[in-house]
Length: 290
Image (cartoon, rainbow, N blue to C red):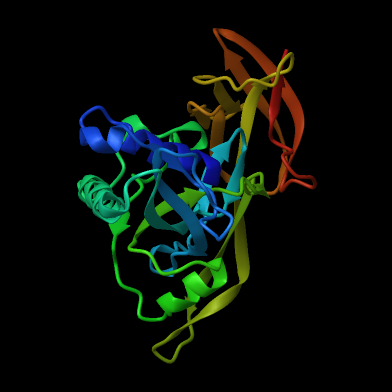
């Protein structure tokens, strides 16, 4: 992903609308340490990726739930990551009197060009950057008081140079998914009758009634694809349910017992007997249609 971000920034700097002097020089991402050199005569703008860290302000703690078939799949939201670049300009083979002014001119052009983009437009995105869930925002030349700038140059082994920073926030998805499993297929409701206690109040009676709701999915046995608009009824009753786009149905108001599910697909009906309420196994009410 980080190499795709490099390519994206290179696309941004190669836009034909960018300043002509900026388009005439190279863009590289090497570490600008004491061993960094350019062939003469040559000029280049260098973007050194020096830090990658999570943007905690943009952290989303809520998992993303997606329905796949008859199960819910959860995944962690993409991590928002700040990628920080140190931008410098280098020239070789120029006369001593024009070297510094040329570098400053090119650095200024790079600064003003990149500063035009509060977010990176999709047209510049490359490789894995394509399809980012959020347009990647940029921050140009933002001061970070927690850093000692002198430490950079000491670590790189070179004299201090004029520079600015570019921070691009990208989204990284680790792709990990957790299956929550199929939904609950039986719901139990308990009812108790209230009786007068003779003292102006009521108390629950010892008699109670248990009512169940069942749910399932109608699928084709050949390929397990779901069947929408199928009718599922309790044989011998008026209770009927029509499957939705996911092949799901629900039937309510059932007492403990054994039933026959009468299923109709495209005007063809079949009986599925010996359906026990409540279920003793998971997905007991799913129907495989031959």
